[in-house]
Structures are given as C-alpha cells and as structure tokens.
Image 1 (cartoon, helix red, strand yellow):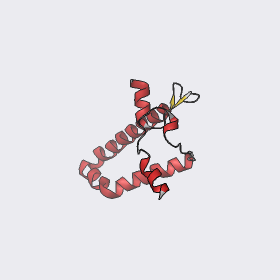
Image 2 (cartoon, one colour; image 1 turned 180 degrees about the vertical axis):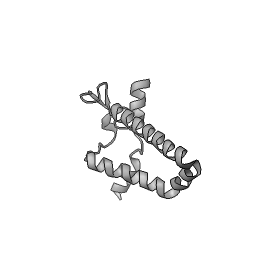
Image 3 (tube, rainbow, N blue to C red; image 1 turned 60 degrees about the vertical axis):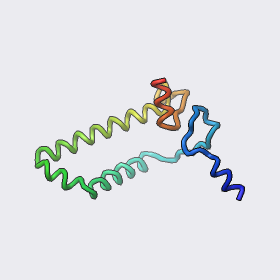
Amino acid sequence: MEEEEDYAQKPLLATSSSSSSYDLVKKTGNFWTTTAHIITAVIGSGVLSLAWSVAQLGWIGGPLSMLIFAAVTVLSSWLLADCYRSPDPETGSIINHTYMQAVRQHLG
C-alpha cells in the first residue's frame, strides 16, 4: 500500500532542471537497438498507409517524397542527439534528460 502511494506521488514529467527531482534511468541502448527501432518505425508506418499514399503520387513523386521524409527524419534525429549533452555533444557538462530541458537550455 505504501509503494502505491509513493508511485502516485512521482510526477510523470520533470518540471525542474535538477536531476534529483526524479529517478534517472540507465540507458543501455546501442547502435543495433537504435537501428532496430528505426526499422520498426519505418515498417510500422508503411503497413498502415504509406503504400497507398506513395501509389497516389506516382513513380516519380512517391520515391522522391520518401527521400525527403527520410532526410527530415535524419536531420531531426541529429538535432535531438546533439541537444542531449550541452554545450558540446561529446563532452558536454550538462545532460538534458528530457526534450523540455534541452529547449529551456537553448532558448531560455
């Protein structure tokens, strides 16, 4: 019963920039788990409606739009990965655990 009350008291989203306000999760992902997630996302969206949409665009517009969407996805992934550690992506002293922390760090 006490565990349920503790669980109910924890916020779903961290509201402060200090890491002591919520439990940090150890990240165990690597290149292969990332690749698997990307492939799963691409296949999942393709199964739902992507095939019909690309067919409606034709042989030139369909593949071209797929390449544009892929480029946007890669760009946004690189930007989010670079925002994880600030100010330098490799040796940054500030680690942003949430997207909102990264936005507050860069935009104020």
